[in-house]
Image: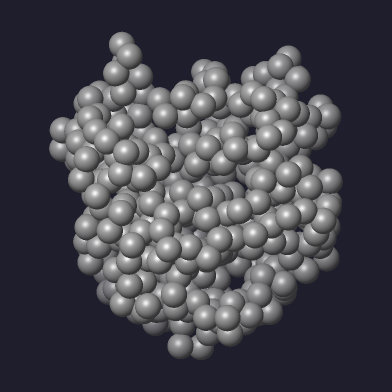
Length: 423
Ligand code: GLY
């Protein structure tokens, strides 16, 4: 089989790494891929936003299965286009991808299906939004409706911050048209977890729950990032809590999708918060998480290609799907300055040494320059370790992290700490 993976970050490297383990696969293409992906796949220089070129490539190379990493091509309708042209694709069609692409639509969907989430109002007029915010509870959350590269969620701890957030999103249009409407939402406190489900429109299967670390620095300080590390499983997610999450959130979500005629072939990411009143949805994503994928796939024991094929054929309930009872941890090594501006092109040393410590190095923002691996993004590599338990996975991963060096690099030193405290 020939498989095309769309994307070029750490998530896509983990997908390519797992797909390459399937005996069904002869050739993997990645568009555009990165320096690490290039070791196991043929990288093609087509951008993730060029849907027509991706579709033409899949047709010309007789690609048997296309797997989409990022949200933008899914919300733009890549799955609809591929299906129209008769190419098999694993990823939500545009109607399902609205769960991520429109925060307004997602909240209305949750309201229609009584799925627990924070109380909210929707605004397209900034004056009304300001009035509502000033008369409401603080802290509050201001969310741009559309995609904003993970930056469109602003937490306001004072009315002044609330005003600034509304003006930034709706008036200054910091995120362009994504800020045409906003969700003004109750601030929820509790532990955040990510639960990822593969679905086929009829049934679903769950990967092990994981936890991301979104802030740039230790102790959850500093600006929000795409994610500085993750671990799985999450010790605080007991069997009772898992059952509650399934019953109150996951089942009603898939039921709601079916009831509304949404196909649901692909992955749905449930961004949850465990509040004193129980689990609630913070967000849906219509794709694998990054860096969560770098810990859940090393713990996944089935053949990912068989799972994805079965999903496209509505036969997910017939396929082997099992998660290991080990633990995994991933630490992201980032460019100094990230998530703000940073320099690129620094040589990365110690990648081979990290692999010798038994870690898996997933490349995110890397490129090849004259045969040397150099930095080309904010999140540069994610070092992942698997071990019998979380404590061992964390010791192992930090031994691997110590070996990787490039100018101005930084990483968090407390990934998994909350999990360890709960063990
Ligand atoms: N790690 C957060 C996300 O993938 O959206």
